[in-house]
Image (cartoon, rainbow, N blue to C red):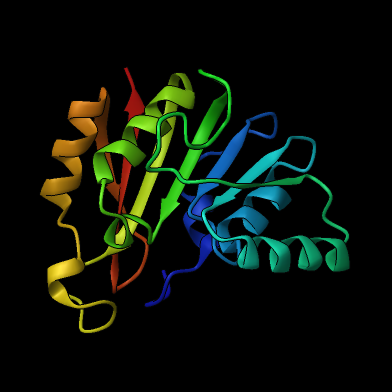
Length: 175
């Protein structure tokens, strides 16, 4: 595993099936959305962010690269039904480098749980609180905090996954 976050390497560890439905919460430029779109060429991948600017860049990049299975959604994942997706509609949700940025972490994880199918998976990737890079330490979210929030949302912790030297990765399942 590289020392820095590499979406393709992370996805290789997840046993993704070609017919899965997936989303990247807090997609920004869409690094994971693009990687997912390549894995899930026959499925839609939802790229969700609160800012229209990065979504516009993502759409232009997808067009330039001939990737036509990414669907962008501009919305606030901290609000009720924030993703705007139907209940139980996704198999896989990636939440990379988002929790340290949001105030209501529980709302984001609750939204992931709402849109997941039964036995769907969530992968949360965030900055390791002990890493020398990233945001200020007080903004970083610990593994223990994420596990507690996930449990309150109705998600089961399955395992930690290797995602690089500066981040941690958690695999969660919907009960």
